[in-house]
Structure formats: C-alpha cells, structure tokens
Image (cartoon, rainbow, N blue to C red; front, side):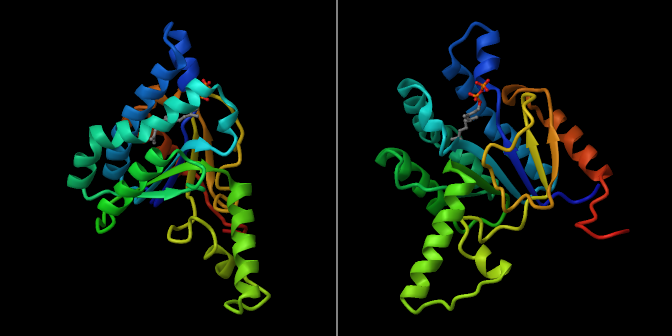
Length: 232
Ligand code: FPP
C-alpha cells in the first residue's frame, strides 16, 4: 500500500454523535478522547509515522464556557488514562498551536507529556491545541520580522526557510487529511502543510471512526494518483 507518512485528522462530530444518543455534548468529547488512543495505535500499526489531530481550534473559544472548560480538561484525562501505554509503544507526544492562552494546568499536562516522551522514536502523536493556521502563519511572520530586526535573519526567505518558523517545522508535509462527520471544509487547519495532501471527507463521526474505517481511508488514499503538480 502507498505510504502515508503524515496523516492529519479533523475529529468532527462528537457533539452530534452524543446528541443522537440523548447524551450531553461533553459525553461525545470523552468518547472522542478515548478514540484518540484507539486510532493512534491503529495508525501506528498501519505504518503512519506522524498523526496530527485537531483537538481545539483558535475559534473553539466561542463555544459555551462549560464546553471549553471540559475540552481543556481532556488532555489531563487522555494522559492519565493512556500515557503509560503511549510510552510503552514508543510514541512521542508533540504539540502545535499557541499554548500561551491555555489554562496553566492544561499547558502543564501537555508540556509534561511532550517532555516525558521526547526520546521516543515511534509514532509522533501531534496534538493541535489552540491551533489555527492563520494564527500559526502570523506568529511565524512576526517571529521572522523580529529575527530580521535583531540581525539574526536576512530579508528574503524561501519556502524551506519559512517552514522553519512554522509550528510543524519538524514534521513532513501532510499526505492525507481526513475530516469526519460529513462537513467538507478545512476550518483553518494546516493550510500551508496540506498544499499537496489528498483529502477524504467521510460520513462517520469521530466516535464512529474505527480502525476499520481508518484502513478503508488508507486503501482509498493508496489508489490516488499523486502528481504534485507534474504529469505522469
Ligand atoms: C469537533 O466535534 C470536536 C472538537 C472541537 C473537539 C475534539 C476533541 C476530541 C476528540 C478530544 C481529543 C482530546 C485530546 C486531548 C487530543 P464537535 O463537537 O464540533 O461536533 P459537532 O460538529 O457534532 O458539534
């Protein structure tokens, strides 16, 4: 099967899944967090090396205070439940997004998980939290401008140089982007990094996204003819 080195997923539909079952939206998020573990293991077994998951966007602060506060507690839940297993499986937790506005406790738990796993060489489980592509690109531009002012960089930058300022500087470009739950939009996720990614918009919600569904998506991906702007 064609290699999918970097898989990115917009984990949509937790709220609708819960509502359909007569449960509060937050119950969907909890099942969604448990599914992060299931899918990280399945993606690893499929040969994926980088799995980037959209856990919280720069726009998600607009949700109710209760829901935001619940979402902010999920990293602690995820790592309390599964960190031991992530470590045993040689997985490395990595982070993208602006962590500064997060509650102190959330930021701490995330940074500790990243630090604790930093020597691991298996799957990189990349959590995008308070992440937005526009925000990431603006932070990169402002950082570059600062470096020029301070004499650390020269004006005039190429693509490879600019990528060094992005949160994803250590990761390869995205090969496949999957969005669950039927919506067909990108919602400010990895805009630079998906320039040549394949896209799959699937009807299953994130809690319904099983290892079998992942396998089906990767099979579909391996049928695609990726030309990267060229002719074959
Ligand atoms: C979108 O579904 C999902 C989110 C905004 C949250 C995603 C978070 C998780 C799956 C938990 C993962 C946790 C960690 C720490 C990685 P939605 O609520 O917008 O669903 P809806 O469109 O049906 O309302």
